[in-house]
Image 1 (cartoon, rainbow, N blue to C red):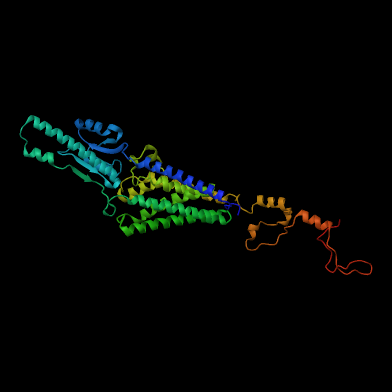
Image 2: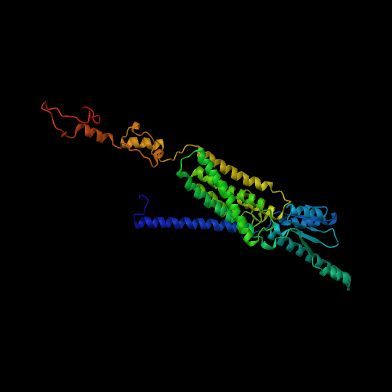
Length: 426
C-alpha cells in the first residue's frame, strides 16, 4: 500500500506528529475545562425578596453588589415559592415576618442552594452581632426572649428538594454524557455503513428511520438504567421517553447530517458535544456559574437544552419547558433534513461514476460504446467487457497471426468459421 510506513524516518515523523497533536489537544481541553469551572462563581443569579419598603432598598443594594445576584421583588412568600417552582428564581428570603425565612430549591442546583444558605447565614450572623453590640451599649441586662431570638437558628425551607435517589444531583450529568457519547458513536457507524449503498430517496428514508429507531432505543436504555438505581422513580415514563428520544435524535441527527454533508470529518460535531458541550450543559455547573460565553453556548447546544428539559420534567412540572424543546427540535430537524437532501443528490463520489468511466476510456483506450453499463449496476452479475487498448489493436492489424488452415489447390484457405470480422483489411 502507498500509505504504509517504509522507513524508520517515516515512522519517527508520524509518531512525532501524533504526539504533538495529542499534546495540543490535551492542552486545549485542560485550559477549556479549567477556564469554565476551576473558579465557578455566580453571575447575576436570580433570587427573590419579600420585604417592606424600609428594608427592601438596603437588602437589594447589599445582594446586588458585585453582580453576584439579580434580586426580584415579591409581595408575599406565596408568590416567591411559586416563582421558585417555575424556575424563575433559585430561591429567596422573606423578611416580612417576625423572623427571616429562607426558601431554596436544591433540585434546581445544589450549588445555588448552598450559596444561598451560606449568604443567608452570613448576613444573619452579621445582623446578630450588630444587635448584640447595640444591646451591650445600652443595657447591662438582656432579657431571655431577646437571647432566644438571637440564638434561634434561621428558618430554611427547601421548596423543591432533591429526591433520596439523587442526593447530590449528579445523575443528569451522567445521563447527558451517555446520550451524547452513544449518539456520536452511532452516527459514525451509520456514516460508514450507508455509503455502501447507492444514493436515493429510499436510502435517505432508511437512514432517517434508522436514526429515529436508534433514538427511541437509546431513550429506552436510559430509562432502564435509571430504574436500576431508582433515579426518577416518580417521573412520567412516557414523557421522559419522549424527551430522551428527542435529545438523542438531536445529537445523532445533527452529527449524521454533518457526516453526510462533509464526510467523516463531520463526526467532530458529536465529539464537540461530548468534550465541550457536557461541561457547559448545566448539569454539574449551573449556567449562572459559568462565564458568559459558556453560559450562552451551553444553553443552545443539545446537551445543555437536554439537561434543562430533563430537570424541568423531573423536578419542576410548573416550569416552562418549551424553549428547551425548541432547541432540541431545531438540531434534530436540521440534521435529518441534511440527511435526506444529501441522499437525494447524485453521488459524486461513487467509484463507478461517469467521471471514472471517462478517465478509463482516456487511459486504456476503451471505446465509450464498449461499456454499456456501470460496473456498480452488475454487482454480482458482471458481464465481460473488452479491456484492450488502441495500441495493441494496431499491432495486431499490422502483424497478423499466421493462418494454419489447409489451402485448396487454388491457394485459397478454407474458412469453416465464416468471415473474420475481428480484423479489418489494411
